Image 1 (spheres, one colour):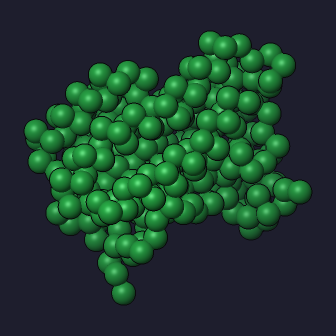
Image 2: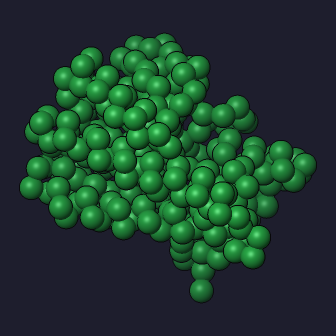
Image 3: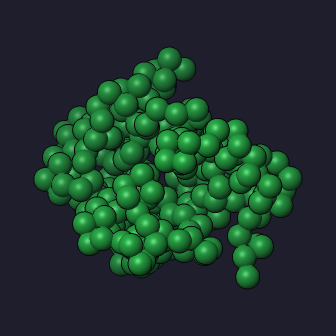
Length: 269
């Protein structure tokens, strides 16, 4: 049986910081989980303070972590960040793309969407991942291959009203499949983790701010949709799937996705 140990490997988590909120975010949970498996983790985020907080959480547990500032809406920033990774670590074995915005960026239904909002959401959610992979893959190939794990969403599988988020997250799967096929010869695997209803600052606290509803009320409302009969998922549930794709346990898996939703999408349709 293959191991989930990542000892000796370098992992870059893009979006590894998080906004303030009542729960840990998916980027931070993934970074901590990869470090617990033995990886040297580089926490990438446009907010250096948030990145450092994640890195410090890893170090507090005895793990190894550093930070790099990266703005996925700016290709020069992406290129500079990957250059820093190569200079400091000399290799890259795991890339975790954990970026995304939706209602907090003004996303809306088709009838009211503006070009500016649509562009902003898709530039971060899809274009940013494409360009990050563009600059990461050469380093990963020089390292002997590796694993790219991108965060999708159940939005393309459900009746999700916000058009830019739904469209961009559908593109993440297409992007991942393209990379899986055209870069397999370089030893690079590419897969997608698809979270469902998860308790994170982006998913819950943003809606608390916009609606004024209590946090627990939103969580309970969403939890009633989960067939497993438990509260909505946590970032740690998603991080476990990230670790699977990062590890040798998935060494023969590429171009695929795992839905982490407690069975929610089984009810659709």
